[in-house]
Amino acid sequence: MASIKRVFLIVLDSFGIGCAPDAADFGDGRCNTLASLTTSPELHAPNLTKLGLFNIDGVGCGTPADSPIGTFARLRELSRGKDTTIGHWEIAGIVSEQPMPTYPNGFPTEILERLSAACDGKKILCNKPYSGTQVIHDYGREQEETGGLIVYTSADSVLQIAANEADVPVERLYDYCRAAREIMQGEHGVGRIIARPYVGSYPNYERTAHRHDFSLDPTDETMMDALMRQGHEVIAVGKISDIFAGRGVTRSTGVNENNADGMEKTLRIQQEDFTGLCFVNLVDFDMTYGHRRDIAGYARATTEFDVQLGTFMEHMREDDVLMITADHGCDPGAPGTDHTREYVPLLVYGAPIRQGLNLGTYPTFAMIGATVADMFGAGLTTKGESLLPRILAH
Image 1 (spheres, rainbow, N blue to C red):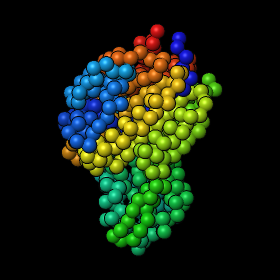
Image 2 (image 1 turned 90 degrees about the vertical axis):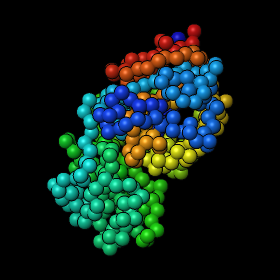
Image 3 (image 1 turned 90 degrees about the horizontal axis):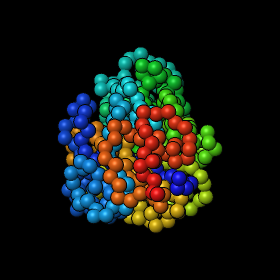
Image 4 (image 1 turned 60 degrees about the vertical axis):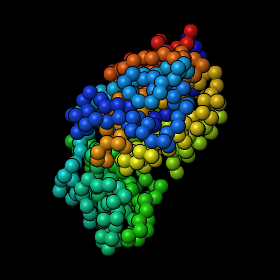
C-alpha cells in the first residue's frame, strides 16, 4: 500500500454539482450550484478543472479536462436533510435516518418560556424564520429598547440568538446559547444553536466575527474518532469543531475573516509535520454568496479559492492526499434563499492516488469517511465503503 501520512479534506460549503433525484422531497426544483457559477465571467478555476471537476458524471456544464490529474466522483446524500450539520456528519461517516426538526412557524411557546427563564428572564423577540442580516435591521431597535434576545430560525434545523454586543456581551450570549442547547434536545434537538452577535445602532447594524455554533453531539462514531483512537491528529479549520461539538478534534483553528483566511491557515498547517487529518470548512461560499443568491460573488470566491488551491498543490508532499468535496448545495441561481438538495463532488489528488480515474456516482457522502479511515488503517462502521482499493496508485 502506498504510504499516506497526511490527508487534507476541504469542504467547499454548499458547492453542489446538480439536482439530486429526491430534490422535490426537499422543496427544490431544478438546481445546480456549479452550473449557475459557470454563467458568470468571474469564474476561472483551472486547478479545479485539472483535478476533474467538469469531468464528473452529470455536471452538465463547463469544459472537461482532456487529461485530469485527479480521481473524481459524484456523491449523493443519503441522510434526510440538506443542512450543514447533517452533511458534514455524513461526510464523516454518520447517516442520519431522521431529519432534524425545523420550525417554519417559529418555536412553540413552551420552548420560548423555558428559553426566557434560562436567559435571565429576557424578552424573546421575533421567533420566525428570517434572514440573519434583515432580522437585526427589523428587530434591532426593539432589542435596544428591551434588552431582549432576537430568536429566529431558517429552513435549516437551527435556533439562532442575536443580540447587540453593547447590551449582551459575547460571553453572556454564548452562555445563553449553551442554555438553549440544553433545552433543544430530544424531539427539539435542532442541529445547531447559533450565537449571532452584532454591533451598531439603528438602522446601521453589522454582524461581527464572534458567531459561534453549538451543535448536537454526533450520534455515532466518525472518521475523526477512528483516527484519534489510532493516535493520529485531527486538525480542524473553520467551523468543523463546532459542527462536531468538539468531538474527535485534537486541535482547532477558527476562521475570523473569510475563505482566504481559512486557506491561509490551511497553508500554514501544510508546512507542519503531523500524521493524520486536516479537516477544513470554507463557509463563505454558502453564508456570503449562496444564501444571498450572489452568482458573481460565488464565482469570484471560487476563482480566489482556485488560486490558493494551486499554491497548496505545489507544496504537497509525496505522502499527502488532498480531498475536496461539499456538504450540500446552495444554488445562487435558484429561487428562494435556502440550501438546495444536490449531488456533491469528490476530487482526490496526490502522489499515492491514481490520476484521471472516473469513479462514477455513489449513494452516500459516507464514502469519504470510510476512505479516510481506511487510509490510516482505522476501523469505522459506516454505510459508506472505502474507495481506497480503487484509487491507490500501483
